[in-house]
Amino acid sequence: MSKVEIHGYAIVSDNDCIADASGLTPDVLRNDADWAYFQAELNKSAVTVLGRLGHEANPNPKGRLRMILSSSSTGLERRMDGWWWSPERMSWADAIRTILPEGGRVAVPGGRQVFDLFLGIGYDAFHLTRAEGTVIPNGVPVFSGCGDDTRAEAILSTHGLRPNPRQILDPVGPVSLTIWRNGRQDS
Ligand SMILES: NC(=O)c1ccc[n+]([C@@H]2O[C@H](COP(=O)([O-])OP(=O)(O)OC[C@H]3O[C@@H](n4cnc5c(N)ncnc54)[C@H](OP(=O)(O)O)[C@@H]3O)[C@@H](O)[C@H]2O)c1
Image (cartoon, rainbow, N blue to C red; front, side, top):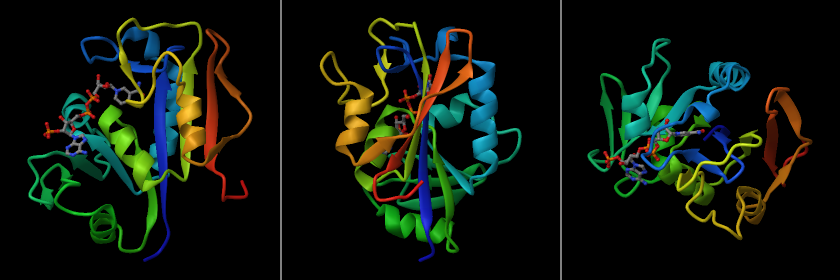
């Protein structure tokens, strides 16, 4: 199969959360510069992989190709709104070979179970945006392994990713971006 490149995208608080205690995205994680960066990255991607809740919560006005994780899928099914995939019933390799036979870039914007799954499959890059100075009490962490003693950075590092220099997306906050890349790559 041609090369498939997997890129994860998350904006997190200082305590590594992607959502609040009720599972919703709080305003402190909404930032125009991050949104513009994320949209530009989606434009470079051949398919966007997301959990069912995120799929249902986020309209798809540009009609981008989506792959939706759900236990309701019989394996891999083409429905009106995208490819529905159950990783328990079909392997990633078989599913993505069907969706992108020519290869291409895969964008993974979560949520948490999806981020966890792709730690095992293997990210080529993880674009970690941080809304610095924000804390979300009892929120949903980007990876289930995050905790008081384990930061998202440590989990990415454990999975073979290495950080590029921190960039500032928005000086207010600031909101920063660190792209973590698979250590086997040159860039
Ligand atoms: N800050 C950020 O960067 C960021 C990123 C992503 C999401 N969010 C926020 O987080 C919230 C949604 O995320 P979430 O984690 O609650 O839900 P989610 O990942 O969007 O959806 C969860 C659902 O996806 C399906 N799913 C996920 N992993 C699966 C697996 N391995 N096998 C089968 N099905 C699987 C299941 O659907 P079924 O119930 O159909 O089986 C599960 O109930 C939203 O508020 C969203 O805006 C924030």
